[in-house]
Length: 270
Image (cartoon, rainbow, N blue to C red):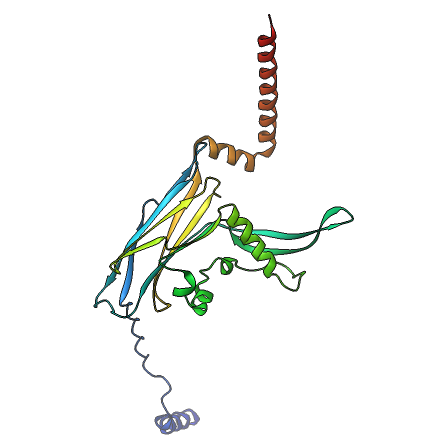
């Protein structure tokens, strides 16, 4: 009897309750593709480092795909960046005290590209706003990812500037303004020269399409840089078997010294 009363109460109350279960909302429509898109390619997707490797050149080329007419009063620009594997490093400041140069302070950088090139159609400050640069980390100073550990100095800018200056002097960091050639606001090409002493790893290529300082499309592609042949065998041996590599190096040095000594004795013999 009690069970029947409960069923009757439920039948009277439930119809009056609001319905909480609702139909799932329609999925949001996918964002429309940009009016102008990059279609690009690389002259090569891998670089092989051999014992005779003296550098290489990568040609980055492409076109602008568009569905509408070219805007008549808005300048089109292209930025190409090529970034090598990031490395953690420490920048130290030295001072001369009592006739001796000693390290007085240092800044540890968590990730700095081993190689970084920015190629543009025009000077970078004319085509890229600071906000867009900060968002996409395009310029060389912003390519530094983060600082590692506690800061020992109040201002780290002189240390990063010193690192950039040293790597620019060695050809590892470059800003090639005007190196991207753009034809009829449709076709573009950039030739990027790679130095001989590259770090092995995956290099990242980025292409930015801009109008009025605003990035409207991007393109990314990897480049695999690796050692091959005898160069790779020696590199892997030094990393994985350092003791054997050291013994082999010592044996080669001894053999070379003995060979040179024997050659001199033969030359001096009357």
